[in-house]
Amino acid sequence: MNPIRLLYNVLLAIANFLYSLRRKGLDCIVLPIGGPYPELPPPRIRLPFPFNRLQFHPSATTLEDMRIVMEKIGSDPRVRTVVLRFDSLAAGPAALHSLRRMLLDLRDKDKRLVAWLPGADTWDYYLASACDEIILPPPGRLSMLGLRIEATFLKDALELVGVKADLESIGEYKTSADTFRRTTMTEPYREMMDAILDSYCDEIVAAIAKGRGLEPAQVRETIDRMPMLPDEALEAGLIDAVLYEDELPAHVRPPKKEGEKAAPLCAWNDVAHWLHDPIKRPTRQFVGVVSIQGMIVPGESRRTPIPLPLPIQTAQAGAKTITHMLRRAEVDKRIAAVILAIDSPGGSPLASDLICREVRRLRASKPVVVLMGEYAASGGYYIAALANRIVARPTTLTGSIGIWGGKFTLGGLYDKLGINRETLQRGAMAGIYSDVTPFSEAERAWIRRDMGETYAQFKALVAEGREMTEEQVEEIARGRVWSGAQAREIGLADELGDFDTALALAKELAGFKRSQDVPAAQIPLPRHLIMPQPFPVPGEAWTELLGILQSLARERVWAMAPWVIQVRV
Image 1 (cartoon, rainbow, N blue to C red):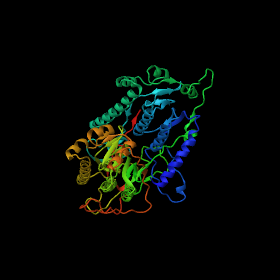
Image 2: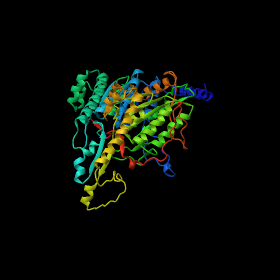
Image 3: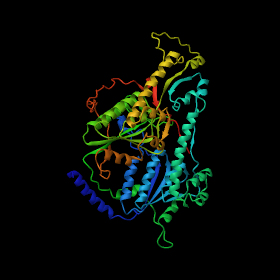
Image 4: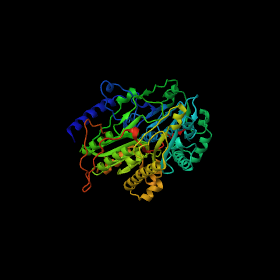
């Protein structure tokens, strides 16, 4: 063992012994559950002074943080009961699936889990059903109403102001452009959304039925009778008690003597440092993690200065930034394998292809495992396709193998505003992207051909990575979005799981045993430009990276999923 690691473990053992002297208050702790729970903290974007001293985005507890918390709780025998206090839980279905697995692992370690919720919607209850007990306060409500998808169509609204969406798409399920060019759902759009709702409902119903010891049919019937008052939920067997928060101590840790006051519960922040830190014997190598969050764009990764209350991606995964991180992983001999944590609805095909090129290079020397988050669709799947293994959550939205693009014509708006524009041009196609007139027949034919070429390249890449024929890919492509559970059935994903699943696969592919302690660490942004090395596969020609990437505003073709789809409760 490394002498430094040995010394660290000795000091850790001494600290754990000192911590073990403290017993009071550790048998029952209160752990807050709230926030969005991103997979990993976003990479720190380097800003010039003094902006690098400012924290525009408040730090949120990540799933990585929660894994550490659960590990400490699960490995300390003094902790017997954990009260999960729900408050403003804003995590998506994929993150909730990971949290639920963590709670089930805690129960397997003989920890009693009690969920206290001021009120519960469908996703809140989905997570809480992993606990031994569920408690609501008297004024709380159980609003497990089911799921609902709302699609917005803006064609008529745009025409009121003289704007027309002149957009084309490849694949009848590639419905991203439908928001602007249609007034209602097409039948393929409706079929796709119904299938996603069914997949989500199956996951929720199965989880709740298993957690509460009910039949799936009972759960579906109960959902149709929502919302419920606490007493009704108690009678239906959906909760175990109706208590205010101050009544929890007497419930979870009743006094030993009659008339004795129950001891107060201890907050996690007050006792976290008293818990044991597991002693580990990690290898010299580690698994690198590259996080790809938000819309995929050319250039640098960036985020909006402040969170915006708009249905847009606040984070953008820049091809230049991601490729340099992958090159760093390629040349670092300490990195045995790489996990790509993708949470993206796609974006620029050019940027996606540049990142995919680096994945191909990296895979030639080190195993690559993709972990899908809430989304890994369209351009997000383009990047994932060549990985050695793909892990999805049951509720991940993925696939969307298709292309769309075009322009918005503003000629009608200019007329309404009294703006007259006259143009002169040289070249038959010089006005192809003009915002004054729609596409001519020749221009539209070129747009369709361009998108067709990109779509064919996309399908060929998926066929190669997933070991399918292009005919098989066409059957599941055509722009269709799939849930993670569906993706596994049709071959777009290998396993359902979370970060631990991806880490176990990465270790196995790198030649380690799954039980070995191989740490995982995020690969930081490189400080300097890293040029690509010669391609590691013998006999294959090396191609240079494009010198100047087009700006996002000039992108005309998109490998972008309909990420504005929101599954509501």
